Amino acid sequence: MGEYPVVTWNSYSHAQRRLPPKYRLAKDLPHELQDRVNALPQSYRDSPQAAALFEAMMDEAMDDELEAPPISIINEVTDEGAPPWEFVYTNQMWYGEGVPPPDIKNLVSCGCVGRCDPKAKTCGCAKRQHHHLKQYIDNGTIPKDWKGVYDGKGCLQWFGVPIFECNDFCGCDEDCPNRVVQRGRRYAVSIKRTESKGWGVFNGPKRIPKGSFIGTYAGELLTVEESDHRGTLYNKFGRTYLFDIDFHHIGADEATYSVDAYHAGNNHSCDPNCEINACYINEANIEKPLLTVFTKREVEPFEELSFSYMGNIDDDAAKNAKANNDAVYAECHCGSANCLGVLFS
Image (cartoon, rainbow, N blue to C red; front, side):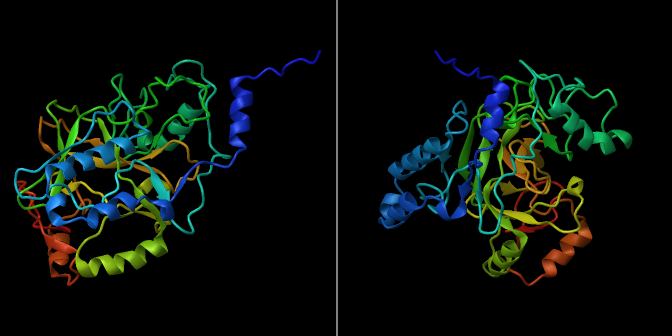
């Protein structure tokens, strides 16, 4: 009688790595439900049923964060039943034309059993993280005795540095401390209509600690050439959610890729409580991180969640933005004490 082959995690993961990577194409972004609702009378779109349908749509889309609390729609300001129906809730990147698929063949993975130790010299993921943090350790931003980018509660300890999480081909458990983003959001949030800034994302009833993962700035992953083309059009009618992937650690003079989150977005603040950080999971290409949102300070119950659309700008940059003729620059209504008076609309 023939013997059955012995299957180990290493043999299984190696076989999976040889298969084509799974990813989503921007041309397949769902729109049937949105088209149907937009064809209905305004009276329906302003009804409570529309808000319930919108919530159900988001809940169904959260197939990659099954334990995340549901997202609620709240409007105590206008008669709108829900945000505009061009919105597609997603935590995924949708690859545009000309963007190569995820590079999993060159992806570094660990063979750890159980939970990874960030100080272990045998953990491939820890070594990759340490390699990319060396410059921050050398300049004193991160202490030499660092114990992982996350603390024991899964909170990010340093901002402005790349995050390298364990991936689908690693041998460690799903509760490994180096798997935070991929486990999804833990805190309840709502999409709420504001008086002067349209729809925004707000915290739920619990205080959120500093360094907590909130979500992904997701959308269409574009070549920078396509992004520039869209940006020219967006600037003229005053709305853009383009985010060039040009983090310092990538080292390139110009971005290669950009994310267009036209169909979704948090509100801006000149004094934001959230920050976007580059995170790598199932991608070896350093130019294609996930854009992950973490709280940069403690967030109070029901406080609005925001980040800066303008990046780190000063008063002179704000004055130049105000003088620009493009409609994409608008008056800021964030209400913070240090408001610069302008933002990308």
